[in-house]
Length: 318
Ligand code: 9MR
Image 1 (tube, helix red, strand yellow):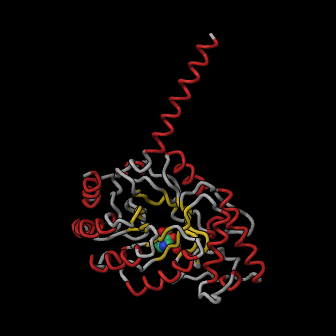
Image 2 (cartoon, rainbow, N blue to C red):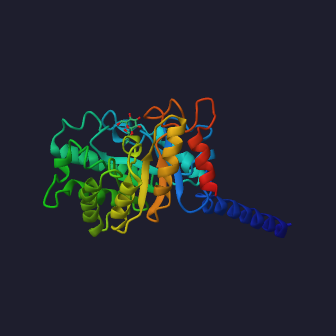
């Protein structure tokens, strides 16, 4: 009898192990993707029913921004962020925390504090985020350093002798708060601008020489992607790859009527996807009426797929 029970227990444990490992092993083999690179998307408030049909990595669109979580001082609201994190974890999808230090969507109350209080508050925020999401696969530590510097940057080191002391300080805090996560920087306007890429690489190399950065995020929004040439894209990707760090396309979207969008996807998506240093691509929305910019959607509100999505499905399966 006892032996029977032990036998049952062993086989249940073995089955659980098989199920668990298939979730873990197959995490990139879900949604549209087969293989080691992920293809993710954003989650805004709730998880769209079709999400898992297409995507296998999660970035919250707004709910892990400081201004969203701590709109009033010391009063943390994690509920929408928890929804995205729990969905990602229960499906074995990598979760990216977006973002710790950014000059937009800061809480309104931060800019008026004393420098000492600003530093204490941002330190607390980074720690709290790490405690809440210790298994975030990725963290966008600093967002848009070349375009949107935080109001409190002088409180956390300012430019300093490196020119980017506030960025270095932010990554040091993030390394302590998120010891299990890959730390990323994130910026827009890079994919179409080789000289801005050089400025970005300067920051990245300062972080890399201190062992503080694990990957490079490039946003790739429609205002660059619609018109950028393949040649420029390759120049930029190769400059970033020369740092030796993996590249993540973090916020891809492309506009156009059905045919224009399709042509742009066909021409440009493979340049990103096939580059050996690009380890994952995240799109910035996909459902009509729920995207940051009109005409970037891939799924119509009636559930039909736009031609670019039909093409993407075939391209990724072949
Ligand atoms: O998609 C986000 C939109 O809902 C917000 O109103 C906006 C506020 O700044 O942020 C958008 O997401 C941005 C992202 O967090 C950082 N890169 C640029 C994205 C588009 O503005």
